[in-house]
Length: 143
Image (tube, rainbow, N blue to C red):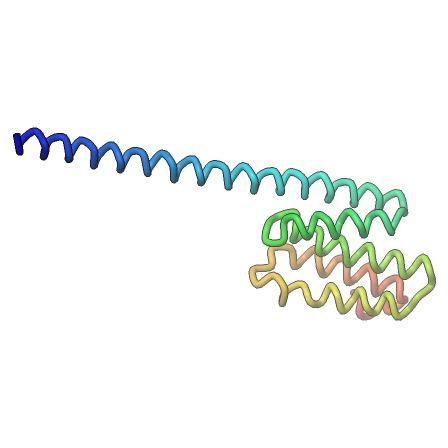
């Protein structure tokens, strides 16, 4: 009788282990699904913001890019949205002839390597900074 109890106990132990493994894998798959939904939404917001920026609709571009940044702060679209957000601020300030706004956008873009410790788009940051310096007519800094 003890032999059947120990065999039954071992069978239940493996059953519990398998059940816990299935539960953990389901929990991980649901977290990945939620993460991918945020990434997909951030992608849509980023592209919407870049289209609004091309169409010179700066307020809507800033709204969409801020949303993309908030949805994917540590991801691909969040990092790109941060840089494009700096550009959108600069273009909005330039359209209003606000020199202080352009200087603020330069400060915003200069914070990029400090905010993202592994900055992947330093060249894009430098390009946007050069564009802003061109708007300020400071050609030596733009170079």
